[in-house]
Length: 135
Image (cartoon, rainbow, N blue to C red):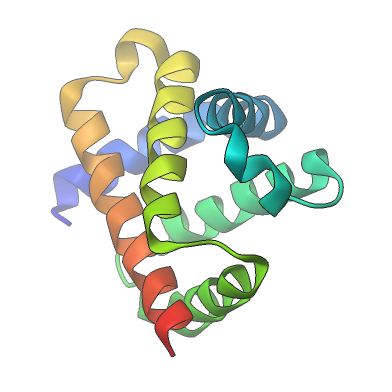
């Protein structure tokens, strides 16, 4: 990622930090609306899962300058999610819902440049999770 992309992601994330549960709710509602077949993969309390997701994204956003310290944790998450039945193609679906939720939350501030920066971050994280699932 370029320094500009890092700044775009961090600035946009900081606008969402005050309402993580709302962002998570938007993401999961959109995901299940588009891909209802994924809902059985999500067991347990969705509010809690949403907050965990937002915390993990927040940690990754803070570590954008050097994600290497999080590599092991993210790969372990990928292995765990594989055990839940998550497939490679499901990461694309979650990404689609994430970008939609970000657009809903940020409105006009979710410019094409901001979106591209988020796609870069998400792709890196999803690749690490896929690598963990493959181990």
